[in-house]
Each structure stands twice: as C-alpha cells, then as structure tokens.
Image 1 (cartoon, rainbow, N blue to C red):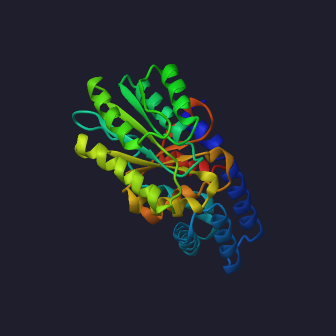
Image 2 (cartoon, one colour):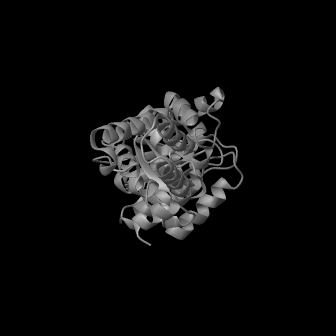
Image 3 (spheres, rainbow, N blue to C red):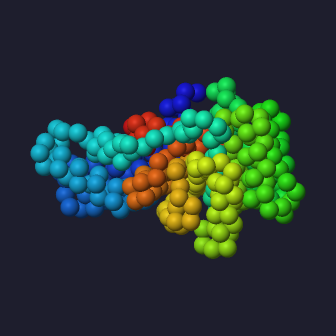
Length: 303
C-alpha cells in the first residue's frame, strides 16, 4: 500500500463522518444560508478541527459562494485548501545535526505509544542506512525496557538501559556516551509517560534534558511530543503544558486510524504552531509516516 493510501485508510473514520455530513448539508440546502453555514461549522467542529480553523474554512466558503455562487469551488475543495495552508511552513521528518549525534527525546503522557514510536523512528533511521542508538529512560514501566530490547534485537539497534527504578538522567548520560562511542547518527530517548499536570514529573523530565544538554551542546536537538489522536481536543492541553515545560520541536500523532477526531492535528498546529513531524496510521512498523500536509488535507476531505 502506498503512503497516500495508508494515510487515506488511516483517516477513514474522520473522513467518512466529515464528508458525509458536509455533503448532506450542501444537498439539503443548495443555497448557502446562515443555517447551512452553521451546520457546516458544527460538522467541522465535531471532527475537532478547532474554532480557529473552522471559522477560517467557513469564511472562505462564504466568500467563494458570494463571488462565484454554486458554480465555484465546492465546500470540500475549499476545506482541503484551507487545511493545507495551515501547514504552509511545516517541516516534517527529523532534523540532523551537522556533526556528532542528534539526540531526540520522545515525551508524552502514559499510553500514547511513546515506546512503539521510539522503535518505529529507529527503524525509519535504520532503513535510511544511518546508525542509531535507543535509550530506555522509562525506568518506571515494567514492560518498557523489555519492549525496547526486543525491538533492538529485531532492528539490530543497540539499546542502553538501566535497572528498574534507576535514575533516568543517569541512563540518558550513559546513552549519550554510548552513542558517541558507536559514532551513531541519532540517539532516541524513550522517556517515561507522565501526566502534563504533575509538576514533579515535569521537573524530572527537565532534569533529564539538562543532563543530556551538558554532555552534548544543544541536546536534546529534537523534543517530540507523542499524542493519541483519539483524545481529541484534550491533546491540545497536553501539548500546551509540555511545551511550557520542555520546548517542543515537533509532534507525532498516533492512532489516527482509530478515531473520528483526526482534525485535532490541524487545531494544535493552528494554536501552538508546533511542526507535525510524523503521523501514525496503523499498528505495523511502517505505519508511522512523515507528515505530508497536502496528502493529509486530501485524505481528510476525500470524496
């Protein structure tokens, strides 16, 4: 299955609900009335596109109909264009330092898929022919270290780990040393899941980043927040709080294939301006894709 087909299949739940509702509204009301505009707005909001993006689309629809009538662009075409424009300067994929190891910290609340995302990113780099190391800095969750070790064996990627309950910052310190010794291109740090509302846990994450930063100037060079798409607009609160604690360089949106709230990707981008780096559209190792704004907009409003 090609990349666009995967994204389209992954967004099917969101797309079906959204397109069906917009088509129903337009069919019932051939003329654009205040009532039909309100219904279109409600349909867009139900997909968690957010108030700012929703109003932008509705305003563009209204302007188009006023100037061209029904003979102009249809609602879905306008919506696709406006969503794509929200990601005009988005930079997907991973940045790479000009020299030395590029340190990537994977953060987020419990259950979003951080450990699996870490492994999938390592696979992504490994398949590009570059070397990477994984640091198992989630020393609290019983299965996290074993899970990463299994992935490491499968991918032939070294995993640096400590014992359960060990200081995550100490593991991170050792991992930077190991990555340098192996002349790795990337070091991926799987951090423990933590609620964005727990101040003490956020301080632990800040400590981990400080320790890494002392060893490798500018590290972590990427701080990627993993968000579960099915949480909808609650993901915006998570992104806002994590961004305050540890400035984020990008987002990884997982589980887009299991929700009708895929519009939350757009909403977070509009409000916080954080680049969307990758999206997850399935359980398989290759279902983590670099974000493509055009393909995403087309899949979201596909007929």
